[in-house]
Length: 116
Image (cartoon, rainbow, N blue to C red):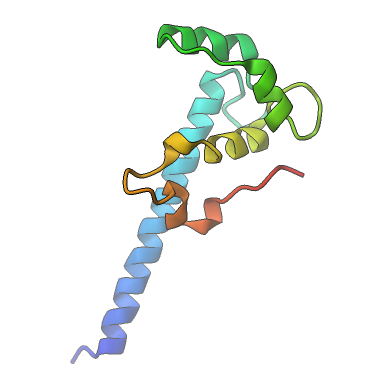
């Protein structure tokens, strides 16, 4: 017979599997975005400011890459690497679920603070 403890254990394992899959998918999506903006597929390299401007202009958006660098270029090398890109993407208000909960809340293991 299945006990409540067994049931909770099964549900917890399924949830952990789902969160791991979601985390891997989210990271891959961010890595793909980083690559499309000039970085390398392995997470090395840097976001290309001109590429950001070109893509933004296709959507009639204006992006101040100088401000972006000032705010997110933590190591001061005048480029956005993958860890800084993760921080930039997580810090954006448009990455919120409509009810106001931060989309990153579902899995704290994806939380990224300022790169060191």
